[in-house]
Length: 278
Image (cartoon, rainbow, N blue to C red):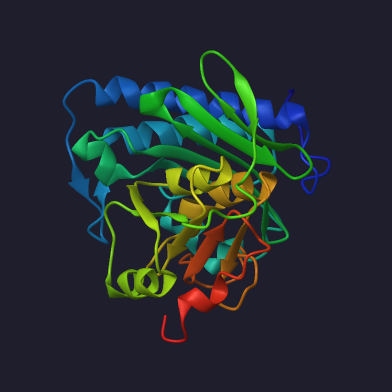
């Protein structure tokens, strides 16, 4: 796809989705080169870890998206602080939202469960998303009107959520973050299977029907969730806040998300499980 302004961000084209997937895969290869060797770990002001892989993936993705769709701003976790300010971004009707290395803690632990996340946001909603798993050489992608796919070296297959939900639901939760609220929810759920998964891979597990439910009752940032939400919605699922509304983006003075639930079967009433105290 040639570099241009995006004509209709509400309905992304297959060519745009492919081009974004190519950019994410370039970043994934750079991440794996660093992963294969020794790397230093720094701490950012919020005490979250930062590596050369975060920086290099940010550089590749930002330059690639700016060349692909000139005029559409790119907001990355590693962007300069000024771009994170609501005064700067509040007028952006359309933007790219990027986490160049989601799951830096998983990257440092070398467990392979880290991702590259790229989402297109239009009118506060994700309309396109790409999530790559560099260590598995695999990618998930989806866009409004185009469905969702899982791609590896051999093939690209259409994915769908599990509908109806399993009688004994499979729940995915964070490998690095867990608290009393999640334990209380699981007690209300009854019989279930819990799988600990890192990064945006949790959304992808629900999108491909390998899990039914991903509740998040703790802090996340908008770049953590937007790409996974786009893939999940394209596969037939939903990501809802505790009031039952779709998770939205770039409409608040904070980049932190509210608590939410990602579900594969929208017809099932998951919301009572969240309780009134979460």
